[in-house]
Amino acid sequence: MASGKTRHLLTEIDTLRRYGNKKIAVFKPQTDTRSGANTIKSRRGDEDTAEEISASNPKEIWPVLRAKESALGCRYEVIAFDEVQFFARDSGFFQLVKHLLDDGYDILASGLAFDFRGEPFGSTPDLTLLAEDRCMWMTAYCTKCGSRAAYPQRIINGIPASYDSPQIQVGGDETYEPRCDEHFILPGRPLPGHDEAQQKIWPH
Ligand SMILES: [Zn+2]
Image (cartoon, rainbow, N blue to C red; front, side):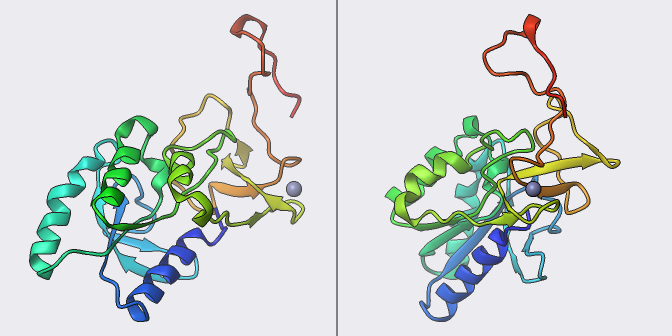
């Protein structure tokens, strides 16, 4: 969401490889088609190769990782993941990352905190529990006013997408704009505390 999170991930990977002499394997969910196949790419154009794994079955990382380590002749020290929001909470991704940590791997992960509804997105919030004080919140800026923006506003044909749209729709700057609380628009959002029969529409 134009916050520089993939750029920061790529910078960390480069710094750890270059100056820390660390062996790093990079993965991403197959859902992320925007960066191109087997690639993670920042808006600025920095990129790295990444193995793709299923967003719904991230356990398939294990044979891929073991094969890569066999080819390398030793273990990787760091496992990096981009776009972790695409790993759903019930995909087992949190447990996978915990397992990798328990196995002695360091983990780098980058993901969106909020989806287009302004609600927690996939595995990102859960991973912050593992990251503890090493969690870094990147900042995007509202395209309307320049204030700090937490939410990815989904725009379809120039119109804000409604609350009942699917959670995942891969897109770039043409589909998502960072928005602040004031300029975030979500037609059809149910009012908190109202059951379905009483739902009203926000006046946006
Ligand atoms: Zn704004």
